[in-house]
Image (cartoon, rainbow, N blue to C red):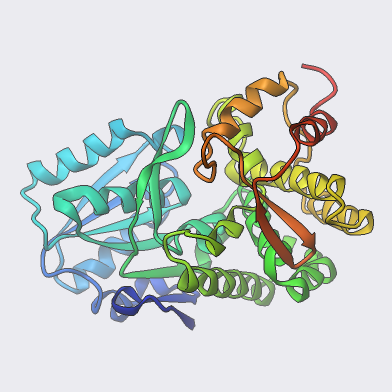
Length: 363
């Protein structure tokens, strides 16, 4: 097992990465509240790992309530926040309870938000079971749900007590979900880690084959890179926005196409292709570097074209992006591979040209 810390003063916590560690009660004991436990999971994950987690909690003499949501992005809704908090209230859970998120990014995001708002804040433990959740959404304390007008527009910054990454759960992850998670892994190389990007170029075959050492490398490096950024800018006052590289386009693609049509990582992959293209159009990024980015994303089996819609549809969604200020869209762009910048000074014509260049040929 390997561990690293997210350094946030009193809100600091450990990320534990290893094989079979859902069964390790010593990782859970120090971070659980004094009261009962609620496990929030989904219909895909519950049959696979719920019993293992329950056995671990039983060994600590902890009662657990299980709340199982339908699998899929559609579950990230205020309606399900009502359902989760309703179950907690009906069971008489107080402020000493702990919510355990057992699942992918959807489960982690909605559980974290429920923990943030239930009785003004209860303990939360993240147990991610997808690659995307392991390397991104479980770390850093961003929680929330979707709104029809924008993704993740309702939420809170709320740090977990710990993150327990059991790499064995990747054995059951469908190939499409695994490749979706690789988009966020590649992102870390693009925004601030050139050596990691180069390593991915050289070792992608081992990653795609789910080689144990390769998986440990990408998870630990991604978590380390994100933890470093979060420690310097927890509430996204500046630097942390670079973690959204590709997301301005990507979130618009998700919303415009209907949540669930694309997996999050797939939409982010298209968004990163677009952000790289926009960077080149603004003479920030060299064409050779843009080609390297495109080649790696294609080799990872990720999509690079968005649905063909009117550009105004995408622009409308981009204007309600959380990074927008004063109605102006802010973009995370690249000076080079491994060096990102944040800017709102982007000519609308260049945005439209990029959108048009990376849409499917027919509707």
